[in-house]
Length: 364
Ligand SMILES: *[C@@H]1O[C@H](CO)[C@@H](O)[C@H](O)[C@H]1NC(C)=O
Ligand SMILES: *[C@@H]1O[C@H](CO)[C@@H](O)[C@H](O)[C@H]1NC(C)=O
Image 1 (cartoon, rainbow, N blue to C red):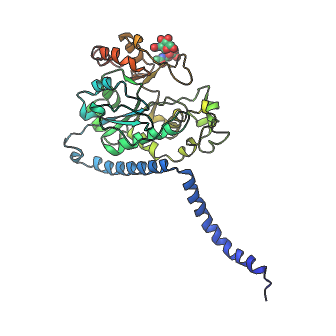
Image 2: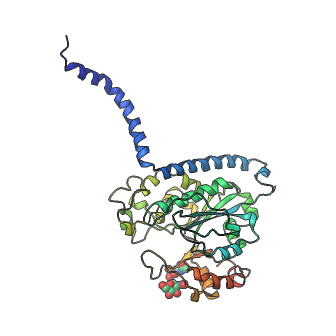
Image 3: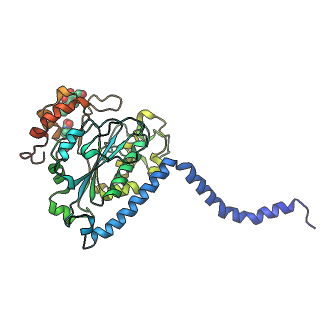
């Protein structure tokens, strides 16, 4: 009755609606598989765990009894120090002195590039390494490393409420109590805002007037950042910041901007993903909750190849420490970079007398 070519045509017609139903699922699946590397799958699982943990912490900390959080019935918020490094922590002895006597007010987490041989630091740094992956300039790996540090710190201790990202070239410019007080205010205020931190801001540089922005914006190709990141909302800022917990959560929850910032750099000389991702995301999501300046001093005078000025041992003096503390904001700088490893000796000599002495130094 039917001519034979009609049968395949008919069956296609019948099958067509099913194809529309199934195809998007298949596409979605392959899209996921293509865009998520094994490293990224690990990260997604870690971020998910940290987000879940923090929502259960939140329930517990906001209930009337918070005694189960630790052996203490009066828990104090902590600062998580996130060390991002690809070489030895040359200033570990100085940091050790900085942390000494404040055990219950901080935690340390270290992300060290596993492809580099690093001398494991002892003391407060011992056993503080988080599972790490290779990091490289001009790639999104430094963003991933920082997000990994944030997630590990959120997961590890619900009392971590500020997250300070530093590198192996950073040094403290003040005592620990000074840093703590700058971030949390009085202990009373810290306790009152416990959990929500609604009155606290993140200290992150967010700049919109940098002359390099147009070139940086197209470093992954023309228009690839659209529609998630229009040029008008693209920002730059220092890679080193101090984030509140709510912003740290926001960073590890983000998928939208990460989809764009993880794309490979075509122009590796103007890419620097880690200098753009965090400022752009936070300026889009909560500009009023951010300082827009960093509390980590850096000297960009005569910078070469994207690296800031590195101080050498003969330059270290009490005068330099005092100069580096001075800022244009209402806060003193808390940390500074970059210092060559041979600065350790002269810095240790200044530690008690100058760096950790701020009794007569009220902010600025
Ligand atoms: C910044 O670095 C330059 C050298 O590039 C140096 O001359 C200057 O003293 C440094 N500034 C400070 C405040 O240390
Ligand atoms: C403060 O602002 C002045 C004027 O813009 C600038 O020259 C100086 O370098 C700034 N100082 C610091 C520490 O950023």
